[in-house]
Each structure stands twice: as C-alpha cells, then as structure tokens.
Length: 74
Image (tube, rainbow, N blue to C red; front, top):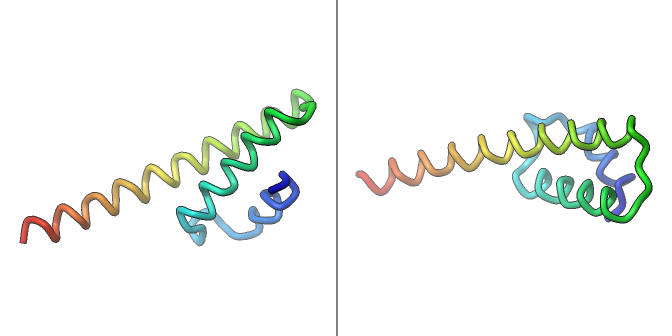
C-alpha cells in the first residue's frame, strides 16, 4: 500500500475509522518511512498522523477490553 492511499484515508475522520483501517494506515506510514526519502516536513507530518492513529487504536482496544470484561463478569 502506498502512502498516497493512506493519505486518501484521511478524508474519513478518525472517529469514523475502524481499527483495521487505522492499522493499515499505520503500516503504510511505516513502510513509507523505511522506503522513501522523507523531508523534515513530511517526516513530522507522518509521525504526527501515526501518533493519532496509534491513540485511536489504543482507545478502541481499551473499549473492547472493557466490553469483553463486562460480558465475562455477567
């Protein structure tokens, strides 16, 4: 997946993004960081986006963990 595709994903807001979509974009960002020459501006932008996506994934994992624990406790 190219970083271009990951950029297109941005039109979908973080609140609308699924865990799988977020992980896919994180992977695309990592790949671009490894394989492409990155300017300081691009690097900063990509790292900031990855940080947002990681926070989203953590939030979704915490929420799911809480739901699963709630079901198990019943």
